[in-house]
Length: 130
Image (cartoon, rainbow, N blue to C red):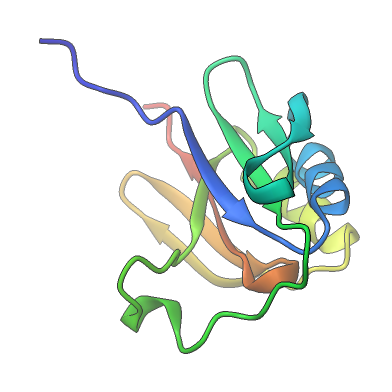
């Protein structure tokens, strides 16, 4: 049996257009699809040919998460994104106005985190190609 693979994750944001543009700018992704979504909302799919994020906004107001994600059942703790050149990715993140934190070198790679709008924590990781 061939193992399953993750195709997408669906996240709720206030402004899917701005969030999609930011992901495309930071990580070289493309908008794969956009249109009407569940409950009268709007969704934009951003990613590459094999996986994507569904960036969703409901038609009404959104509210911030209650409590810390790591103690919330079903909470989204962070999104992990693999890049080839972590230094170039960190430069793009910093230039976009975000503050990288929690840097770590570990076997087999390097990582850092940053916080986007709407409480989205992003982990950027690069693996050694040894």
